[in-house]
Length: 117
Ligand SMILES: [Zn+2]
Image 1 (spheres, rainbow, N blue to C red):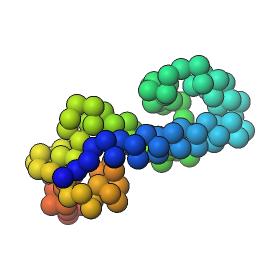
Image 2 (cartoon, helix red, strand yellow):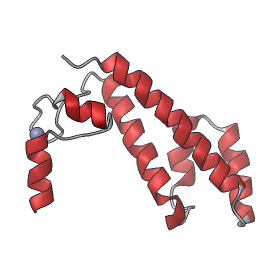
Image 3 (cartoon, rainbow, N blue to C red):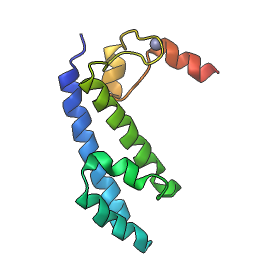
Image 4 (cartoon, protein in one colour):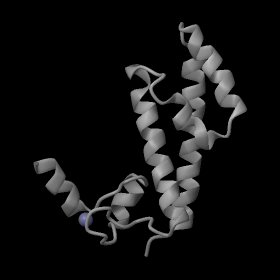
């Protein structure tokens, strides 16, 4: 049995870390536009950060943004009661997979189908 509330705690903890990393990366940027973006982000609800940073940031922020998207998607699934189900076949995802990465979206067999394509 998957404990979605437990995973939610982990997801929210990582969300906080990724958001902090994003802010510090932007603050340390040599691009002054990024410094004003930091101010904008701080004034907004973190739930809107993805929209606000969309298309404004280069490849160096890509991995942070992707992680943010994955985490927010997983939190959203907990909210709607769909957490832990494969997005392709709707079967339950193995709890070992979810423990390894709580944002995982597919069961092992669907994941391997995608990788072999
Ligand atoms: Zn599946």
